[in-house]
Length: 466
Ligand code: PLA
Image (tube, rainbow, N blue to C red; front, side, top):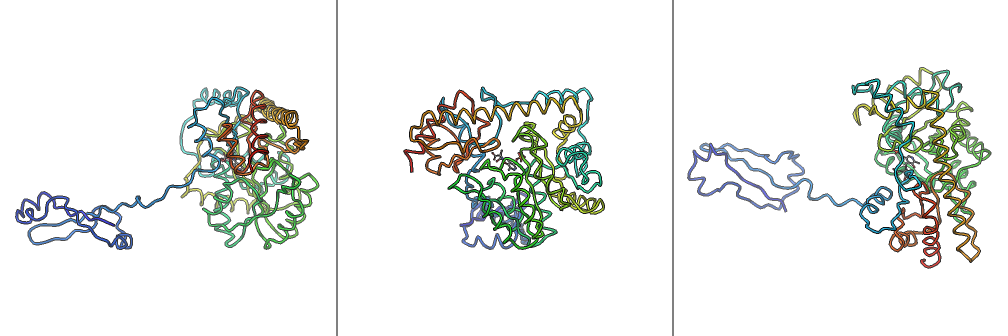
């Protein structure tokens, strides 16, 4: 029910003592017709003003514009961190979001990042707006890091690179490009995938469907299903592929399987759309983790790649990444870039500079670059060692003979445990292991010291909860 406030301005009140007698200031008049307020585009509280001969009456609409908005559910991934922060239990462990922690379970700022920041301070750099496409030095090194400096797509200037708001913002910008220039084109997303992929395409009004990816029976890749679904997609679809360290499964195609995927994508005239959120973080090698993208580029295909520096440089909160579109010519790349800029301008105008300068310094300076590679190997190595330790603990504790070796076959910062929703809930409610409800755990948030506790929690949840 809406209410109307009728008020009189003091000046008119002075002129109209008899009216004042009947209408006190802020008299509320109730009405049922809330729809008329919405229909009429009543943007302000004071919406209607009528002049009478001796006074002017202003009717203020007191209906709330926001009261009717319902509570959104917590984000399936970032909501886990909120719940973790709210818990007071001493044993609590946050294996929800994919964020690297030290063995002491503390956030980690890379030494190279601190060094780059010192350099930036010494240079006394300013805080002027960046151009819409971002920092030129960043755009140059980020494309080179992805494709390799000597790649023909770089040499021939066929890549349109635009700095954007980390991986998510880069995907969103690409989604906007699809919506504008490929109306009706579908994006195919792996089943399962990083949960936010669907949100991004929904919000950009880009239709999507899923292709088979994970086979729970083998705890591996459903390669035949994947190929069949990519084949069955309408010609010219965008095929969203995780460049490395598939999230959430940790299962990547083999090099031969990548070749087969490229065959089908090419055959069907699809456009490969890579999400590269973990370059160098999956295997410890920047080149190995970019090999899927380079394999497609080497075939002369047009493709898109969203990049993120959240994980590999630990720049989560700096929101630094890029969208790269490989075009058939330098001219086409310039045009595509101009359109990406045109899409970015009304969305967020231009990207932040701090993270871009860090990346440009680290990737562009040989000493820092080498140090970065070592730190990345160290991070990837720590994740691999807790992966091994978790496996060892599970096999030592579980007397049933269950084969847990799938954990060792998975790549990257996550392990897809196979725990279902209620088992995952048991992990949190009983064992204080905070994780997403799809059974994914972030090994980057695990320490060696907590492996035994985690193994106990997994075994209990797996065998005692259905
Ligand atoms: N793409 C994939 C496959 C990701 O896993 C993530 C992050 C992103 C893109 C986006 O990251 P960015 O915007 O920070 O660059 N996924 C995290 C965090 C690590 C998240 O959900 O936002 C995850 O826990 O899955």
